[in-house]
Length: 117
Image 1: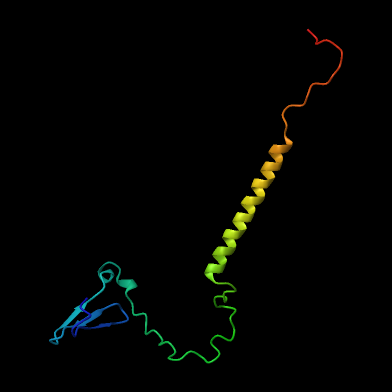
Image 2: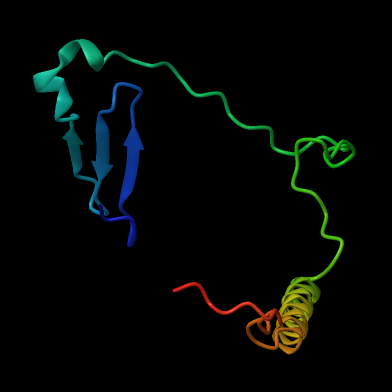
């Protein structure tokens, strides 16, 4: 659609589009579905205009809005990295103590009976 250099457009409720060129010539297009599904192309009526100015207490009740951040993104990232490093450090130290306490298989019991063959 030519939206620059003087072209104007207008869309009607039934989906018809009216284009006006800079020279004043008018082009009218109808939606393609009007030929295939004429019962669906009924006028939907006008859309109510939005309020020009939001109410004064627009942000007074924040229950339906995004919450405010407690920390910045950089602080969140640093906290996640620190938490992961602490977790990894604890996992490594637990693995070291587990490996140092393991000395191999248990020594055989000392009894004087010969093996049963």
